[in-house]
Amino acid sequence: QVQLVESGGGLVQAGGSLRLSCAASGRTFYTMGWFRQAPGKEREFVATISWSGGRTYYADSAKGRFTISRDNARNTVYLQMNNLKPEDTAVYFCAATLSASSIRGSDYNSWGQGTQVTVSS
Image 1 (cartoon, rainbow, N blue to C red):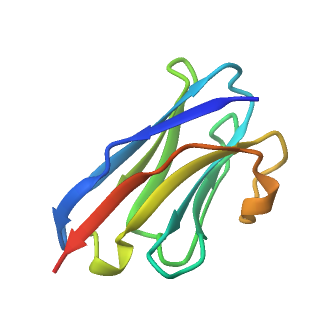
Image 2: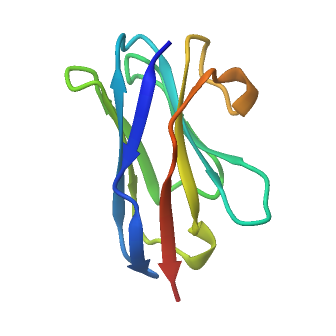
């Protein structure tokens, strides 16, 4: 199993940018995903990237604004978030799976502790 630690969250004004990082310990042959959970809402999928980085997939809410990437030499996955909106406010989690890319949280078996992103209007 892999251990995941997110960082990079914070408070930003609408229209601003943040880059989240997820440092993984252990092997890197995992599909990685980013999910988020806002207060009172269910966890939702944001983006996923294959272990090679060759395939990515985004939720509609993230398309055109967010970019997922990875640096396997650094065992780190990133989520670049641009043009942030107040509705992006949530705790963001990274997750890992040995399966193919998936938008289902239940397919991921390792999770980080989360990092808070707050977007003010």
